[in-house]
Length: 142
Image (cartoon, rainbow, N blue to C red; front, side):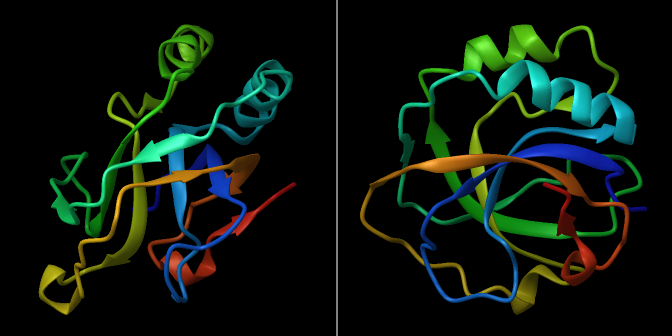
C-alpha cells in the first residue's frame, strides 16, 4: 500500500536508536508534486519545539487497506492549526493529531513500546517518499 508522498517534521535528534526515521507526519497520501508545493508553503513557518507526551502507544490504523501498524507518542504543537489550514487545499490525508512515529511493522507484537519523560523536540521540514510497503525504503527527498 504505502502512503504515497508526504510532508514530515523530523527531529534534529533521535529519541531512541532505531532503523526507522522518527517523524511527525503533517500530511501523507499526496502526489509528489503536491507534496513539494505544500513544502514551499510551509517552509517559511518558524516552528516552536513540539511537545512530546512520553506515554508510548500503538496507534490505530488510519486507512482501510493499511498493512502496517505503528507505535509512538502523541504530541502538541502550537502550529498544528496553521498547518491544517495550509494543507486544506491539497489532496491527501492531514494528521489531525500530532504524533511522532517511532516504528512500523506488520505485527504490533514486535514493538518495544516504552514510556519516556515528556520532551520538547526541534524539527526540520522534509518531503518524504513513503510509497513502499517497507518503511526501511522510505526516504527524504530534500
